[in-house]
Figure (tube, one colour):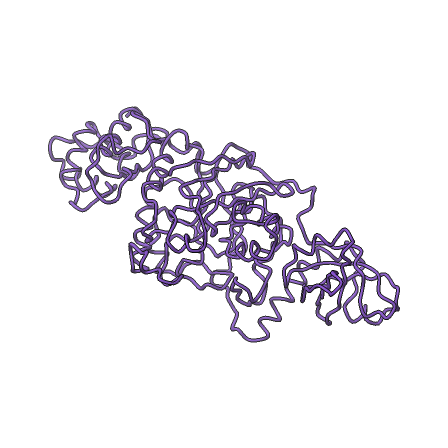
Length: 520
């Protein structure tokens, strides 16, 4: 059956307000009279059905009613002749006319098959701690996680300085050159305007003084408690303090060269859908899903969702007054229905966020089995927050982004702000840790190892949470905060958050170029 005939079937289905699985359309086009077969299927499809599925077609055709005959080969038709599943752009009614179409659709357009054989695709997951949590909250767990952080990030710094443990520095003679790698234990200013930084390692603590007239004083504004640093300088005459001459972060090497895919393939990076909120932008989501069915999106073969699939319950004060769906499981069921509008041949990877029904403390394990079953559309890979997803050789560090609130609050506005969320992400890359500060706004769970360390440099760093769109490159690492799909809530107004909603950043994995599609 020619592609034009398949497209006419798709157009007929959407005009009647139905979605359709790709397999259903394929089966219809395999019959001798596809349009007669379609009429037979629509006679039998349940009244409450919004999606025409393959089993509906099989059931209707099994009766051989209305003169409809089957093809001898039910697999007739090649993948390039079979359109993907098609969204009607609505999940509330089967009544739809041409005036209801999203602006991204064009009359007579043919939904595009993904551009390559699925066998060319590859997804690898690293850092997924789902099912691996061992923390009990005991003191020893906290010791373990910070030791692991210091060991792993310290290893990236010890080759750059002549490191000595804190206790060894204390016994060195005054005037000696000294260097230390440690966790930032304290940051405070002196009466004369200098800065005192206390570093801690496994042996103890030692104070380092950053003079107000030295070049490194500007870096003090960027420091967060508990991050790993290296400092070198000169001991005072009594060896009780060291004067800082240089300061080093684990950082991304300036010579870093990211990996790219061997073919032209794209990934949609989105987050913060917030289904269940009264402000969930259903029309924008439907327009996005419709666009994914067009030729313009034929190279989009991956979708990465960085958390907050639903609005959740009890996340902030008086949230119940802003909910459209008050039951958390019903929120996920509604999200799943919206996810079904995405073409079925797009590979999906999801991590949780702070609004999702998982523990708040990071790292957050992936969803439990009950929620995974609810969100089974497209058989998505559901992993922990954070996790590293490698798509055809391109590594993407996915982190929901709660710590961005802390970075933006702690650092000067010119170095980190909500208007430029990607610049706040640069600081996390520089520290090689997604949430370095313990005990603040970001809740951290102690584990045997620190799952929040950036052991390897990612090619792409993808976050959400702050509901702002921003992207740029830091030492050749592409940092993207992907905005949201929720209009401004009363709570957001109260904290002066003006969201960037209804945007979908699309990344070319072969070049790491970014284009942004707007659907609001």
